[in-house]
Image (cartoon, rainbow, N blue to C red; front, side):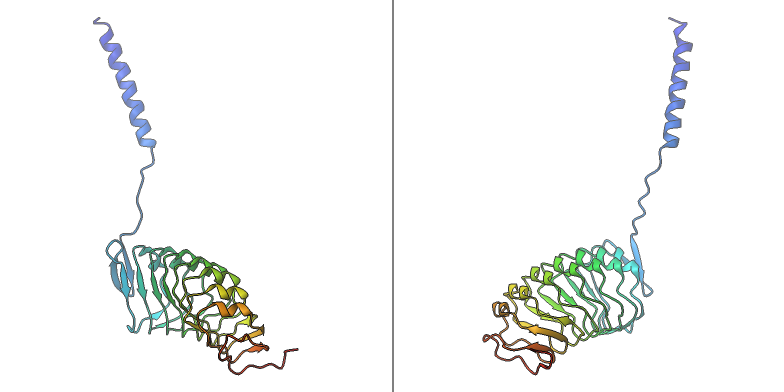
Length: 246
């Protein structure tokens, strides 16, 4: 029995050494998720910041991509500043947002497709900027939107038929852009609309009868190239350039 003690001691040391070696080779898990974000010289806690209202603060430069780290935000208002450059794609990380207001800046570039990640969004205000490009089809993912206001930009392309998914919209304003093509009949799916404004674009073709299914019987349509005959449900269609109509 006494002869077993040295053997057991050796086996224990061998086992111990193997354990230590395994532990040394195990990668340490490091949580590099930021706990604070610095924006325009101010430090914000990621955990405690759920609303950020910096409207009318004379902010300049671009929107920092780090803003996408404030993942607890439900409201973001950067309106009435002098922000330039494009909307960062990291804005799509803010999936808890219900309110996003970037109006009255000097933002350029296209609306990032990542905005389609903000499926809790109820109000989206991007008007009075210099945004270009077409409306991303991903905007159809924002099924909780009640207000989509994008007027007074330089948006091009056609109105995407995915817009039919936004059945909770009460306000849709795409006026004073450079939109082309015809009105999609799917616009009739927006039965809760009380305000539809598509003025001062380059829309062509006939107005689909389905427009009578949406809630605004006097939508803003003037300043386009829409052709008669017009649906009888519309009280007023405004001045149209019909020179290209058959």
